[in-house]
Length: 272
Image (cartoon, rainbow, N blue to C red; front, side, top):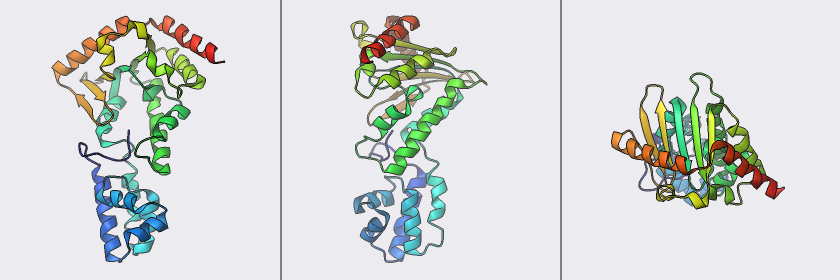
């Protein structure tokens, strides 16, 4: 999840509209980009990105610009709309489907899935993005990620969640004892299965990247894959079938849930 968009993804319309209004009001009031940047404590380059809609116009920038440009609240009014975009455009469709899911299979090759992350782990990832995010966006992204975890305890409809984590996920420094214990805690939920795929059991399909398969209450099935720069969600039966086959193969190679719990427990014991 990033706070700036590349040429292959479309920024939210609210960002682009607010950025355009920001530029128009600034020009009308004869306020330079440098003046606005100094008053809002941002770089001129960041302000330029906001005006192009590539970066989210933050509440602070909109409030400062509103006062400097004499917009009488018209720029500040945009805050409620840009703040609704909690996730990048390339992930928003998936987040919508995730909220509707009744079944979810998730395989991760390098990161702890967002639904299982502790606040500290989420911060370590989100606060170290390149290019860096502003502080407000970091806090909003962390809050949004933790809010997604309500699905773990959802009662109506109950969702069945199955996670397989490649061993490499657990070996990076960001995965501390707290995060390992969180995995153990969640694995005890009645509707959650957590499995570990050890290095020695890796098959080619397990090295091709993360993948998610979900089914909604309307029995629609979607496959989702997220990369560093491009994400893709598909309802194409052929794609869903291939992802289902790969996930099934990976699950059969992974340790059983009780073995996986013991694997993680040994990691905890070795760090204490």
